[in-house]
Every structure is written in structure tokens, then in C-alpha cells.
Length: 99
Image (tube, rainbow, N blue to C red; front, side, top):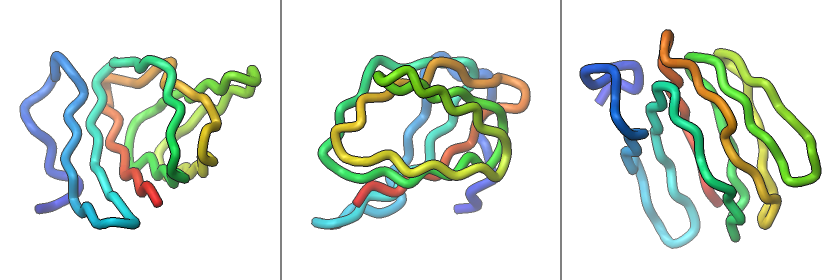
């Protein structure tokens, strides 16, 4: 698999591909083409790399993080957040590591 090879676009829903899943770590590639998310409240730490695209991550405490290609973000356990915007051109290509 090449992390930059994308499926036919646009996508009706986000596409999540598990790259690794063990007892302590999960690695996912997520492709977004304009989708947003509900609120997340995760038990793991999440380290995010936006490989391509533009996105906005909103936190419950009113913190807003605008991300562009190459930006990283660490989300602590139980830090409520949601993805409030993603670009469709170019699509968002996320690499997410949960630990």
C-alpha cells in the first residue's frame, strides 16, 4: 500500500483503513472529502498527521485548530473534539496513531 494512493473520489463517507491494530496501538489512514464528525471522547491518546488537505478540529473547550498539509496534533484521552471541516480538493489524507 502507498499512503498517497487514493480511491476514486469523491467519497460519500469518510474511508478509514486500519494499517495496524495491536493491544496497545492502532494506526489508521482516513480519507475525508468534505465530511465532518460528531464529538469524540476517546480513551486513547491520538497523534494525527494531516498528509494532505485542509481541516479544522474543534475542541469542547472552544479551542480550534486549523490544520494544513504536514501539520500534526496530539489529542489527549477524553479531550472531547470533533472535525468541523475538511477539504474536498485536495481531499484530506490523515494518518492517525492511537495509543
